[in-house]
Length: 234
Length: 234
Image (cartoon, rainbow over all chains, first blue to last red; front, side):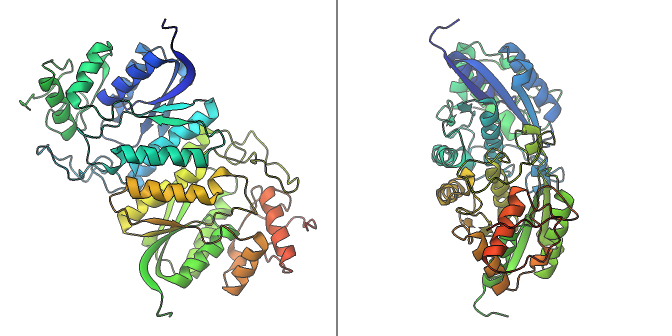
């Protein structure tokens, strides 16, 4: 056990995807005590993501009382996104773009982090780790570094504890760096899931699959999860 | 109809209490178009509050498609508050205090406002009115003016629209000023509900009843809603 680890309790937002996996691996390096939070917001692949969440939690020995799954299906009610609205098909990847994608749930990360802050106050956690990525996967306004600076200010103003801080350890990484970091930290990549469309075999063509496969291609590594098709993204 | 009213669509957070009633009345003075948002977070008096919400919405002619009620019972799941946890009794009022009350849901207003921001992006609203009160009802960190400044910065950073702004028109008012403002604006005080404990007759002794009754006493006015008991708060 690393003697330099902090004994602070850290909440990790674990969707089950690769970014959150690496975020958990980094937090595991730095903290003795981890608490995992998963949000079910009515996404199409929720069952698979929840499996990934528990596999990753098992891998890092997160105790049951520090695994929390919160149903945030009110986001579906608010609507307006292909991630939460069954009537809108998940769009195929059309190459890199600075446009805000269709799968955008307005202000989604604000809801998700607010859950983490509320839970942190209750269990006494002082750090919140989130696998937001600015350059590579983004276009979402709530993935920008300045957004997280603003959120940390809001936490200082709006909590009793005032000592809770959001950490975004992969925010400046490209997808291929995330893949390499996962390998370096021996994170269980096989347990993660990124596809927005399928639960048995990843579709290979949704935005999230495309970004993931391109990351592996650029890292010159093979993705261990099953795909229905593996287009050659470069 | 007031020709100087803005045609901007404004979302009003309407709990059904007196502060949100006066906030709605002020927004009605300034805007042609109002949208009402109510959050059901598992409070004990939810049914009564929802009735008040619709009575107030009827009074201000808010169309059905601009009335939204969102179930945020995940706050109950996170727990830790007498407002959402049936195991903790609602405490009696013990006089003014700068202590943070027991009925505190950690970071609650952040969740509530995030709903309003998401909904505003979808329906194209540019103002969010919330009846937060700093001096009189407070002790909650998320009722401080600096909290709302920080939140407005977060909205600018975290939304596509970037033009949505939180307005807190009663934040510097004392309860008796809110009562007087309600009367001045002919707001339907009889339709509002503040009691945390009862739904038929207000208990008269919970924090919220005490603050309300003291506000009426100091305004030298009589509260039109029924009470089980009316202690003499001064």
